[in-house]
Amino acid sequence: MIRHFALTAIAAAFTFSAAPAAAQDMSLTPAVENVESTNEQTRQLPIRVNFDMQEDRENILLLDLSTGERVAIRLVPEWAPNHVERIKMLARDGFYNGVPFHRVIDGFMAQTGDPTGTGQGGSTLPDLEEEFNMLPHVRGTVSMARADSEDSANSQFFIVFYPRFALDRRYTNFGRVINNMAAVDAIQRGEPPSNPTRILQASIAADNVPQVMPSQAPQREERITLDMLNAAGNE
Image (tube, rainbow, N blue to C red):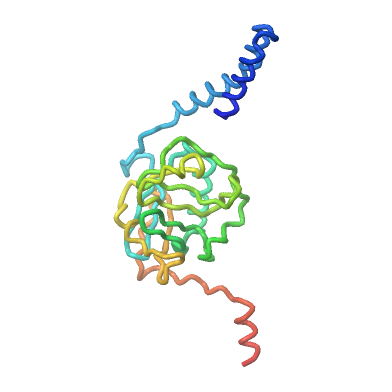
């Protein structure tokens, strides 16, 4: 957009003598209004994250991990309303229960949200349109994973270990870890890890769901493959 605006301004400068002043103003007005609108939207975004666990519990995502730890994430609807709504819907439906952190890169991030554990899976819901914003990817940022298309986010998300500003405005930043980042730091590394850390239960704080510990977690049903059926038929 900035490059387009600059080129438009340069072109207008070269044609100044041939065009009336009013015509020039009209050609620049849409670009200027668009920039002003974007700046105004940016000014309205909340910059500070609320770390108070007792406030706005409807927008706190709790992750009970297979390590016995509970992580709290502040969801910020003002940053990405559709992405926050998707995360809350899937959490309340139990979609994330038992899902592993399948891609964990030391010094970068921990990614989860795919029940297959391959990085290729997601929910049956439609993909989301991007909601990129100007919020930086700092330590503890929670952002939506996607494929090549900007509008391909679905259920997978990642938590940033250290600042990665190259991700800004390219991935939808929708929240921040507000409690127990140490448990995130302890997530098993690997792509995928040999013994992955799992989300035993994801819930919304307002629902007051008791924490699930590793000894209480139900076993995820083993996916039956064609090879397994063929092997059984040959016995």
